[in-house]
Amino acid sequence: MRFAGSSRWSFRRTWAVLSAALLAACSPPAFKSVDITGADYAHGFSLESASGGRRSLADFRGKVVAVFFGYTQCPDVCPTTLSDFAEVKKNLGADGDKLQVIFISLDPERDSPALLQQYVPAFDSSFVALYGTPQQTAETAKDFKIFYQKVPGKTPGAYTIDHTAGTFIFDREGRLRLFVRHGTPPADIAADVRRLL
Image (cartoon, rainbow, N blue to C red; front, side, top):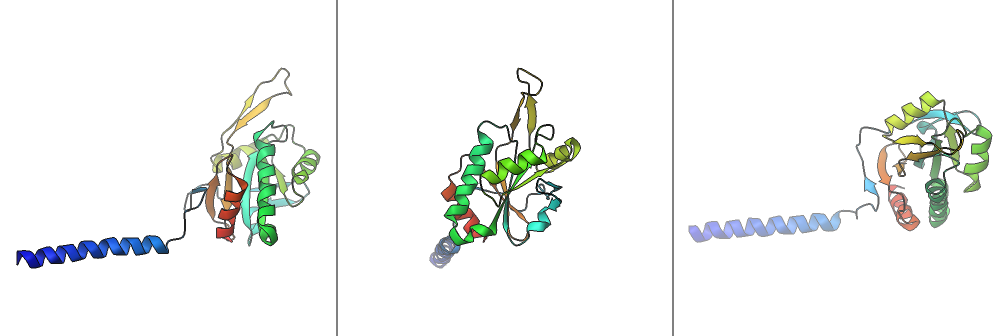
């Protein structure tokens, strides 16, 4: 009896190991970015477009949407991120049109619609720049759990803004899926976007 029980236990253990291995083999590879599927924040936005009209996340249903918060006078993180996403679109080839990049200004004092419309599409003509009042900006940033804070400069208008440097990715149904850390290679981001497509 002891031998039979031992065999049964050994069979169950072997079957459990084999089942786990089969499931792992069938599972798709992990995203390169941070998978935040199911997170209860970053529900969307409703802000003015620099090109005119009010835009919300629902307007871009059917596309993978990348949302980045920044400001036009940012010396490094913002232009680097926008350049990286322009490269992501190129990496996607024909599928590049299925990615929509949204830049939300954290600097309503200085980022006028005209300035945003000149700055953001310079990286890619399809990129959309959004802005709001100081209150709308604060509310949207809070919903996305974005940190931002003015850092005084030599003159009142020469301040910089410390801010969260990552990008949020929504799938084609408008569900929050990924957080892309600043500095993630464009090829890795493109691979993640392809999986969402």
